[in-house]
Image 1 (tube, helix red, strand yellow):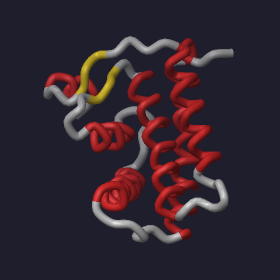
Image 2 (cartoon, helix red, strand yellow):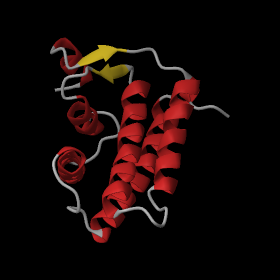
Image 3 (cartoon, helix red, strand yellow):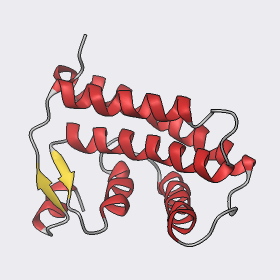
Image 4 (cartoon, one colour):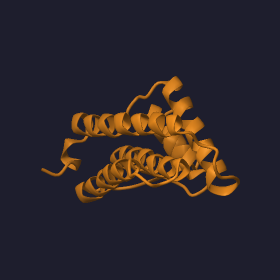
Length: 147
């Protein structure tokens, strides 16, 4: 499948991105990366913030490709789309998806389920994804990057 197939299936809708939108999404990912390292916050909260960085970067890639995810299964679709946008491997997507599932547990069901090691792993994944998304946009849609 490709993004056009996802669109035909009703999982995405067409979207006309602007350079400012992409800049804002990448800036939010940067902010979340920074904030996820703040001292004094619980591991659960730092994990949640690092996950937000992943989601913002992935949303920027999907937007740059000309799409937005529909509300139903939004986070799942945005994460899964990374194979079709920046070309992440299935193994990397599975890892990010495991973080997504854990974030759902800590966000809606239980606290204290995340270790500092998991926060570091998610932070590293988010940092690499943020970089990869910008490189991909620069290569495929350079008109969407400011400056």
